[in-house]
Image (cartoon, rainbow, N blue to C red; front, side, top):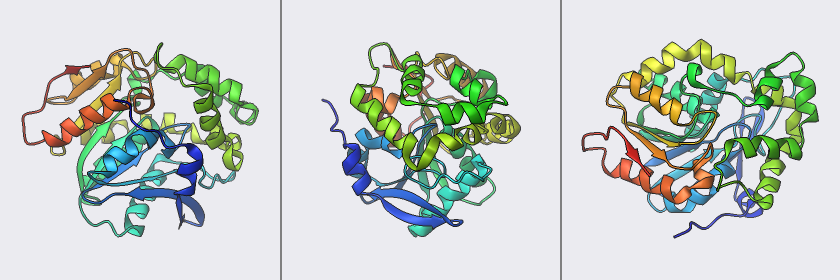
Length: 300
């Protein structure tokens, strides 16, 4: 059974706003129960979760925001963007919503790194993370394979590349990273581009891309946190993703004790868009079975 989408125009109308360090941040929340924080990736926004939003809200209190520099949130030009600050933002949002319970994390891509930082902070008693599920992302710098556009944004000419970035460029990049049978529709591409273009987003893309070297700086701390094994973890990964597909899961199994990983056959970098029913199934199974011994590997 297909999951109902939430059109972007409706999604935007449901947003709320709070101020983080002087910047306007858009956020969404729905449902009741244990808090579940959804953390989006680069270069998109929290609308990435729209297929999963209502099913998850039937069981949990779901919370998501467009991070600083993304989606409909503020995108200051003269700002040094940092994954650590994005983790601060997530904690500020939880405080704004008076969330005091242990929080569950579901993250993707760039958001994986933010979740890794929150997991490290859990072990520093700065936040209580109850569980964490990662979708396709660069959990290990040594396995991350950036696409051409990311490499160009990291170059000295990145500021020019970002300002010239267009919908056509986004289409070319996304065609490389989605599964062969699960490419986004033209309408979805319009929506992805609308969120990137919002608030003159292309002007800051070369600054946001600094997350790639920042991951290398934080690698030992973040991998060490995942290796502690006290917080239940799972990876749900689109197998054919050229950036962080099956090769990343192989590394995850090498480094993480009792690695719990699910590979989605034929799915690329955006499993929550490409195969939301499968992601939902494997996420709910993870939450329902945390009291059982973790699985070594599953395939779907």
